[in-house]
Image 1 (cartoon, rainbow, N blue to C red):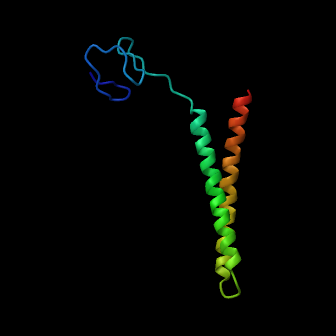
Image 2: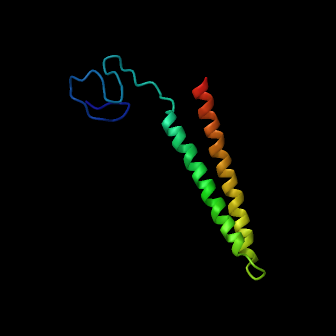
Image 3: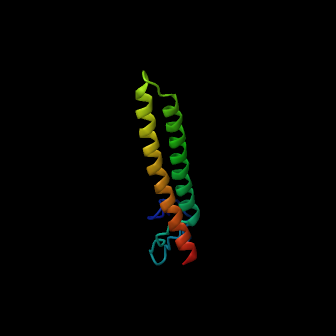
Length: 102
């Protein structure tokens, strides 16, 4: 029989699906909260993106001269986007710490 929740095929006499669906009660699994591990991975990704963009933007600004002013503006824009990404990551880290301390 096929699970209506996850569409996984189960033996005909199965009472529970691997996803947690109860065939007898016809009740699906409870929605799960994002795990602390996935939240941390999300935050670290944003921090890494922010740091990488900021570093690359700084390198572009260092190469900018009178004839290559566009590199300076591009570097400044990358640093700004990197800063926003780093703030998003930091906000998620603060949320993780708050949940851990609660």
